[in-house]
Length: 85
Image (cartoon, rainbow, N blue to C red):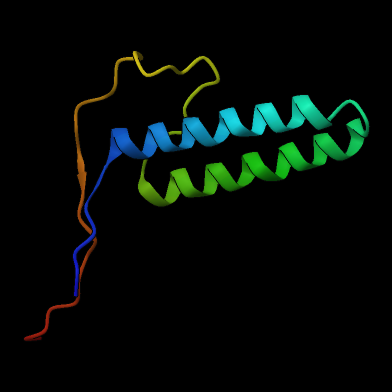
């Protein structure tokens, strides 16, 4: 069994990249059907917030860049069952 280790700054950057993709998609296709684009954006944002909560990080702000200072590095260790319990 492999142990998954996630760095918070990596997860934050992944979420920021997904948000950039969302912005590009809604910019490209949102003008044709703005009401659908708004609903899509809201659902996508909710999904990103859910993933951020699962990893214990805050959803990055829209002005996030690769040069944005990150909080101290923290490692997420999943809790594994004790095989000897």
